[in-house]
Image (cartoon, rainbow, N blue to C red; front, side, top):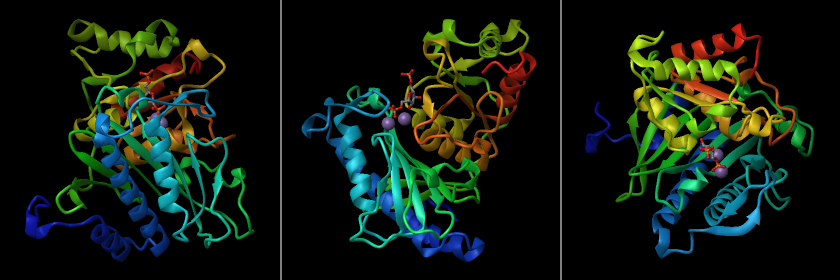
Length: 344
Ligand code: AHG
Ligand code: MN
Ligand code: MN
């Protein structure tokens, strides 16, 4: 059945219901959660689309906990996700790139068994220049039945995620989702307002000739990353014996989406500009959900040495080095780190 065929359209709701029937791993609360997040993404997509016609461009005049200047859309998207999710009874608490500490569901609403983490607006530097941006989310289960919830409840390794996804606000608005049984993509039909299944069991090719890294940081990288990129740049005459192409959107969602679509490897490694931090990207709401999606699509994700999904977070806003995408390239980068004695 071709999902492009109008009469055979499969909506997000139908996909989730059928996944529950087939695999039994999407209880009603999780289904509600995913549908609410997807609906919030539609609201964010509408705000993104308004651009200069709405009051959505430029900075908000505030900083987040990581010391980054917040854009208006960072703040708007964060509010949309919180307001959409706090009343449904499916969540115990939320955490976000844009909030210092966790947001516990207020007492006036029932508490659910899930915890939601998000990067409400990924690729903030691309908002004002009209380049693809996105939303990334991760879902964890609250472990234990103790009343109340604290930040420690969130500090679970990524392999315990119940679901993860992202939405790309690009030429098309696309929602990519995993609940642990492969990766599905849904395209927003703006005429009907529904998410339509447009790809299922997405697979990342094991080999690639395309890498994504911010080359302007080359002089700050550790030797294993430098070696890997030098070899790619050497092309057909070098040790790899083939030419490589490069892409860098500077929105992780857009770079990961390209890799899911046609393969590639994405690196945001440690670099000596901020030597005391493991990397730029955040483990719990950027690296973990993307690593879950990439692994579910047959790819691989490490911090240069260890599988990202095995890392046990020490704090909510922890950072991590990221190497993800086509399996053979990620294996190679990880091997180079091992050979150099583990420099990240
Ligand atoms: P965010 O906008 O949520 O802070 O994330 C931006 C991240 C990521 O999306 C992207 O891959 C990377 O930062 C871009 O970094 P550079 O500006 O160093 O290219
Ligand atoms: Mn981000
Ligand atoms: Mn962000």
